[in-house]
Length: 178
Image (tube, rainbow, N blue to C red):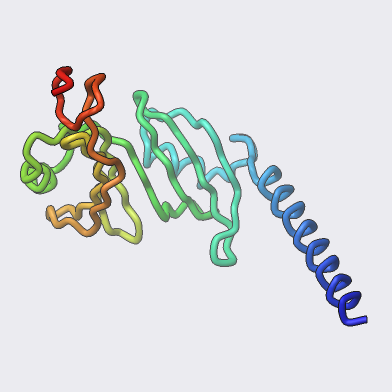
């Protein structure tokens, strides 16, 4: 009898979980909207935040119980992602920028990583605070850095493992097997 109650309870839990996944999937599909459905203040804020940008995707979402609009745009081939409240308040901006457009203090911090190549740079603004997410490649390793406007590293994460680019089985960069 106990086995049957446990099995019935598990079946109910599985059914509820499947239903919850179905509702989540339906919400994910339904939250994408067109530019025409976007409130005028949100559209105006997006165009002001990313001048000359073209909208790629818009999603209407709930964050902390409030409606927000997640907008992905392209400006001169670079990505610009925005989170905007219905009244047009820009809550967050993530904008891809050219490495040469990084502020001097951020560049000075990156100069400490000798022989590193900047692969990607993103300017992030949230709650009035600006920071830069920079991905560098150094000695075959991909490193993600979060750097403040003042040049302070607040996060550093090594993503790739050191590797050599030749065809032999050793750990050096020459093609000789010895």
